[in-house]
Image 1 (cartoon, helix red, strand yellow):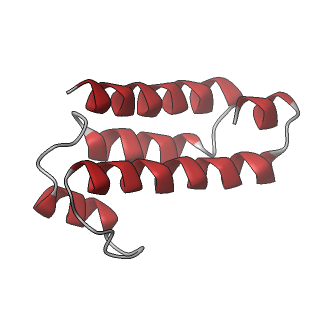
Image 2 (cartoon, rainbow, N blue to C red):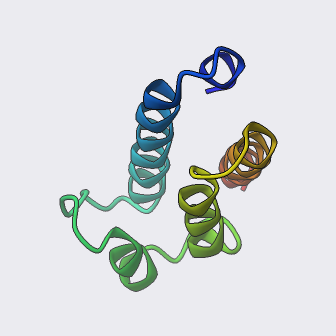
Length: 92
């Protein structure tokens, strides 16, 4: 994402943000021994079936989605927060 931001390639930024979000959900479902339920209402599924998840998971996901239409610094901040939260999940 940082490389795409550096070259102002907004289509690539969008692609990699979507990939990061998909990976985040995969990690949370796997950590809770749950199968991924598909692509719809993922936040609701995490809330209902994944007790082990990063603190403020929904807020971090929404912050990243909303940051995607802002400047590079806001996007990078949101990406870093998401990655840090996932790293903490692995430490548990």
